Image (cartoon, rainbow, N blue to C red):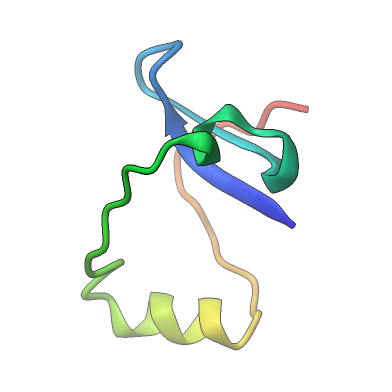
Amino acid sequence: MQTVHATCLTAGTVVREAADGTPALQSSYRVVGRISDDAALLRHWLLGQALVAHGATVRA
């Protein structure tokens, strides 16, 4: 399983990493809230359909 989260190590950076090895999940701090008000985005995400991210940078 992967986790995607903002990192505090580099400002404005989002990382995707293995959930079982990330220090981000070792905290007991959790935030629960609405993911988005965009119905199309949520529908695509829940159905496993491709999402287009404009202006995103992908690092290998």
